[in-house]
Image (cartoon, rainbow, N blue to C red; front, side):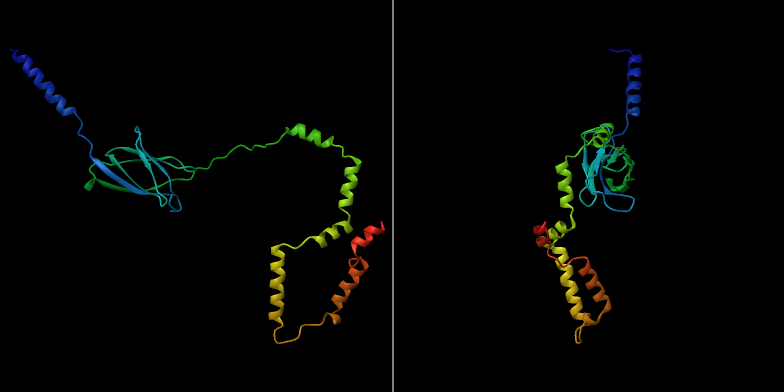
Length: 214
């Protein structure tokens, strides 16, 4: 049989332990919406419970739902935005809590990086010491001759964008002069000036015949 003192001491320890044991936190259905400063939804935001391996992600519309406990800390993180946290309050009615979380954009400045086969000093030295062969130089001059470029231009078909613009310009001209007669350029002094100027510059010559004479 235990002494009376031991019984009183054990009883006081049991009562004190019951008084210091924190009440169990209730389970809460936590739902909400993640958005940016403009009110636009942020899809695929990481939502995790602090000091836990549990969490979820927001859907394509920024909505999420998660089961946790009162007083849990929830961490929100998304690429390009600052990490934010929220604490689930206690005594929530119906054990449901809704929150609209706004994340602030995080601006990150990266250092400028230049990628190349040489360093800047090596590139400057190689460029300044570059010596072109005479045949390469002559070939470049020959490719830049006006007659050769004109021959290439005449043999190159127009692209779809230019063809579309020409077609729309012709349609506009027909609609503009519908029901009437278009002006005669034979009496237009500006048209005659352009014709004489083009004739002096040799724009009506065949570049292929000129190249054969050379």
